[in-house]
Amino acid sequence: MTTPSNALRDRCAAPLPHPDAGQMQALGRQAMDWVVRHLATLADQPVGHTGTRAELEALLRCPPPESGRDFAAVLRDFEEKIASHAFRPSHPRFLAFIPSAPSFLSVLGEVLCAGTNFFGSVWLESAAPSQVELLVLDWFKELLGCPASARGVLTAGGSEANLTALVTAREPLSFEERARAVLYVTEQRHWSVDRATRVMGLRPDQVRPVPTDGRYRLRIDALAELIRRDREEGRRPWALVANAGATNTGAVDALAPLGDFCRREQLWFHVDAAYGWVAVLTPEGKALLEGIGAADSLTLDPHKWFGQTFESGCVLVRDGRLLGQTFAMRPEYMQDVEPAEDQVNFADYGIALTRRFRSLKIWLSVQVLGLSWFRRLVEHCCLLAEYGQRLLEEAGCFEFCFVNWRTTAADVEEVVGLLRELGEQLERRTSNVER
Ligand SMILES: Cc1ncc(COP(=O)(O)O)c(C=O)c1O
Image (cartoon, rainbow, N blue to C red; front, side, top):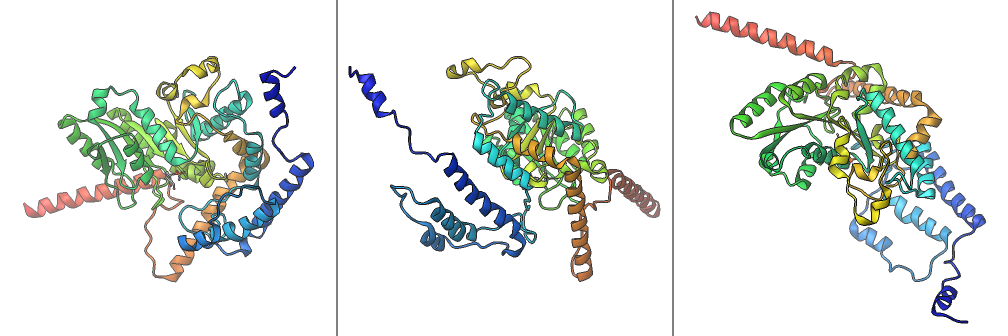
């Protein structure tokens, strides 16, 4: 008998055409062969090409084809028209901006992530992927010396991490306090901090840039003076954003003294360590970043110096409960995904609901390469930087002003102390002469 439901069942009985196992293998091999050839010949390729909008319109503009085309032909288009008009950020001669050199294991992690497309947002649907994210976050916490109370979430990048951290930092303030809240930011901050303040609806007068010293590090004396004045004028000093690796200058703020200062002044202490955090893997880096684990929140970008493909960021929050208090919501259709006490719905810790299994590529590459590989990566990059410095010194026409890799925070403190003492001596002598 033909019922309405039978008729509908007949109409949708045949699934959409989809490649079978053999076809998937053939297509996958073509794509992976292309990637491997691309990576293996990277050094011999040009660093990249750009193009005008008109050129790219001419090259790529077309209506979406109603019937699909052959994969090999589309892959050829990708090679000839798309890959040919982009820079290769992992090219050995790509020295602009912040280069990116993902390990091949991270690339494979992307393949597995996309191939499974697990929903990395709620425990019920993604128990083991969520556990892997917890594990990776614990690795980072341990490396950085964060307390057990810290929790985090992997984000699309440092911009999202900075925004997530600042929104979390603001959550405990009353609405009255929020209107008077002042955020102090180093002059050397990344501009994503400014964008975060705009997204959060902070007024320009609520964001106070703090001057830096001769090495582009935030001046605590200047910060103290700004806070004193703001308190006097009835404002609510609220949070500080410091750098562990400034984008423009590489400056690392004096994190330990700043952490102590923020605790005394009851300021939320956020450290943007987007690329710098990986330096903790080496003794020199660990010394330079001393105090980082005491931050109230941290921005880390594994896609910068930790060999990961793009869209691999991370935020850690010292009092991890605040993440859930800030972001968790239970709309009706999600009523069945309430996590148990010891489980985590990562969608509760940030802005995105649907999230890919971001921790997979990090887990995979650390498992296969071992942490020692990443330590060597940092050491190798620093050697390259020193070599670059030497070449520039030999060129004789460059001026140098940066925190030397071999200079520890303690060295810097010592020099600052000596300079202060000299200044005081000079002042005493001048006033004696005047008398
Ligand atoms: C110090 C710092 N913070 C934040 C960001 C923003 O990170 P993302 O580009 O991953 O959004 C960058 C990017 O260069 C950075 O260098």
